[in-house]
View 1 (tube, rainbow, N blue to C red):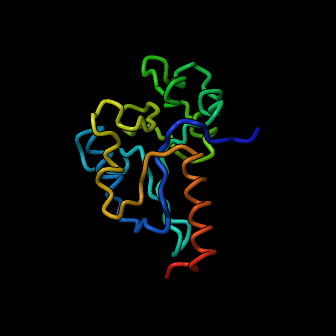
View 2: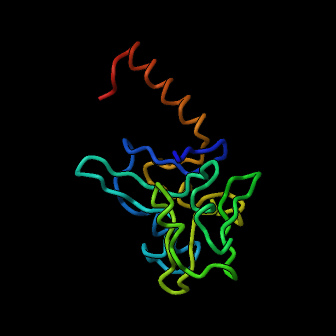
Amino acid sequence: MVTTTSKHQYIACDPDKCIGCQVCEYVCSYTKTGEFNTYRSRIRVVRANEILITAVACRTCENAPCVIACTRNALTQDPKTGRIVVDDSHCDGCAWCIEACDFGAISISPLTRLAEVCDHCEDIEDGPQCVKFCPKDALELVTSDQRAQRARRKLVIEEVIGPRA
């Protein structure tokens, strides 16, 4: 089965802007746990090589593989927002959700041994704190369609005026 991102919003990173500072990880961990600890973050900075640095959070996939893989029905997907919800009373920390996620966007808490996934800071009025505090504006809350439209626009601009240095 091929994983496809959904019509729902997710946190996307522009690798052309990301500098790998990990502010997103620190802000996330502090917002969710009260401590500055990148291991407790629900967004991850990934360095693919010396040039490509990006951040990864839950992509709110259609027919989310993590939800399908959960043998205890601890993960569900909100039909309105696409966010993955973890029911701590059902999660046993088996990590099948981690195996199923093509984006590496789920983790097991080192303290509770339960699954953790980005919820876009749903309980905070001004939204995802990683997006708010990113010093390079590399993160945004978008849909796949919005992101594709921006990429097409960028290509058209580059064809007309040439690539930006």
